[in-house]
Image (tube, rainbow, N blue to C red):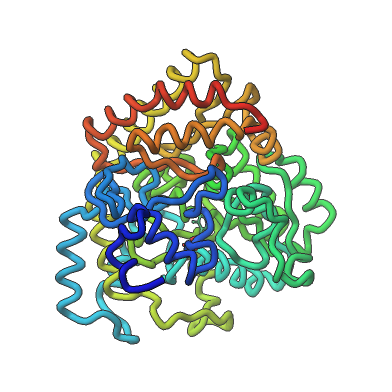
Length: 443
Ligand SMILES: *Cc1c(COP(=O)(O)O)cnc(C)c1O
């Protein structure tokens, strides 16, 4: 590679291809998070130059309606004026202090105001850190080691939680991950999602050794597989009966499924909650919080250690606070409506081509499964006709709609998705449905 590549188009290559080649030369697989590569759909990713409202623009200036929204954070759309102004203002006051500051207090207060059972909250820099810390706290609080998780639920790339972790792992067919000591994985019990009987049996056998059950409040990392009625409440009951903690991972659903996340829809009171994505407003900020008596076990008030140089970073906290402040009831109405409209039109387009499918929703999160069966767990996800997704995806991309480059991911919309953006998506669906219809298992 040479300096000319900086111009983008050289040696007959498109600017996208040229930038991606440079990325591949210096970054494993050309990406800083695996699902950004097009491994599950084929081809090379487009490289983004800028974004505005509901649109992404690649380095060649091609416009795409963005149905990934940075995997959740951009609930207001890109470059929302209130967020951009708050960040610009924060930058005039300094970018990191390593001492208590105002923005982190205000963001924590907003989280506590929105999610009733969260009495105390600790800010961190990623969802991974939030779930990792919540599990350490649950183990420290209970004095127990075992963690129960569900197949297909993703909680970040925490060693103890990567077993059967849904999309990223499923996309690349990695059984867990090399590099995780057996001892780490040994204390993780993986159960089928939505199977309360399996949870009952494991508690009957190992109850006194189980520190916590961690679950996505409504899973969106194996595609969208909402909890069956009573599932989360049943987890809460079993945890209570056996002295374990329930950790509700709302990194994806938090402040998106409603102003109080999935908790705001279902009302199941977990002991600990984890947040990320929306609450960072496009910056690295995440959090875990919950019952005061549990949270007070954290250093410096308690013995369980947890820390971070950039935790509560003032710029990130300001972006998060500005985002949550702008997430008014009309924002939730809009994203729910847009998700319903697009979901219904996907179904109509696929029905027209005779393609059996399910569009599954959890609030404004939704995804498409090809095939006849209801999808209630990860086995059903894997049994679906995912080979229909790559041609569907590429047909949408060619028509200027950017979908998650994996059949196992949720689709995300924003309040900036206006009628023009939605109409562009709807107009692209018939051709994508035809592509899905003509897909064959062999590709
Ligand atoms: C995205 C996600 C995480 C991990 O968050 P990162 O910020 O990517 O580390 C954890 N849990 C859930 C449910 C997520 O969707």
